[in-house]
Image (tube, rainbow, N blue to C red; front, side, top):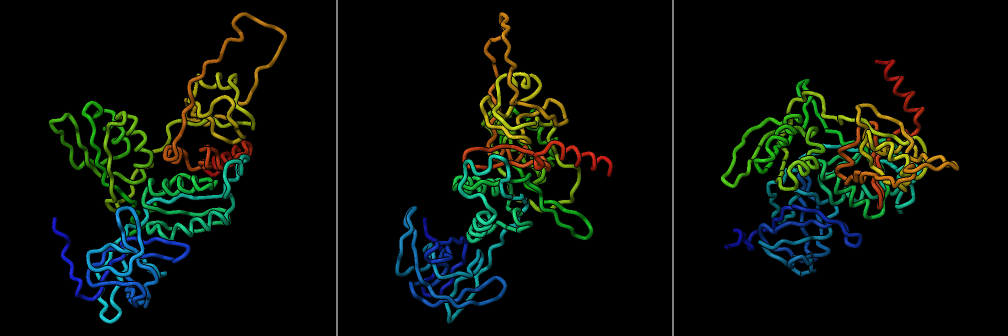
Length: 413
């Protein structure tokens, strides 16, 4: 296959398509040399998208050999290189020849569509699993991420709360999982879509969704998409017995769909979505249909207490699990939340009866992945993320304070 049309005799032009950061050499601009040659210690010009022209010097030059990055002395048009010494480089900027600078068409980066609040973990179990717990640790880690993650935005709302905006649920989940593996403990809120106003009308982001399923799962998937407000644009079946559905759906209603889709298609479905644009905001967001079970006190979950709860709920904890007051331990069969005591022990007496001490049989608890936990929580709840555990909890752990806040809201309504 012929290579791209490039000319090594022309003045240097390279479009920055990725940025990296190294604590030894600083920010690194990565891209393909469009024209000309570049060499180590060469004086160049960085042409910013806002029109500024900044002089720079190539301190290090790296080439790519398979998955390995090696230091090289020079490169020419057609090569993919990484250039160190560009502290001001951003995606879309052009690295050009100092004497004959010419900018390339810039890249357009989609704006964030979802935001979440990252906050210091203030649960009673804080500090058990992680090494990095304070707001200073969170701030430094998020500032470090901004150096390489071009689609991310961070705003400090409070001393212990940071609003992090990204390009969808997966974008933010990857960041949280990375921080978790690095030893961070934090609490995160439910994702919220970023709306904007044009001509007095409120607009929200929408995604173009494509799903490919076996025709046997058409009914359950179509019902789910219908509840989420999918506007179908195209649907057709092929001769292999599979059905393809395409349409527009709001980013708000797409939250949590992935886990349900995998379960409904038994892992055989294919799904892809990309940013479609902003559309008028309409309808109320899809919420959780059922309430939750909230622990009343701190302790270890007991088989005796959980056996009594599982008849009318789906449990999230097993016997012997550490539980604290305000933690969510299950899903209620009804719409309202219910405060329960999963740590209650069986009263001991000196009386014995046949069959009274049989083994307790419990259904295995529902274990959440990170994405499922983020999609499950409501506005008054948080997901507690640690290197070893994912717990769900209420923002306000004290039951009496929650009841007082609920009563004030009812009176105000």
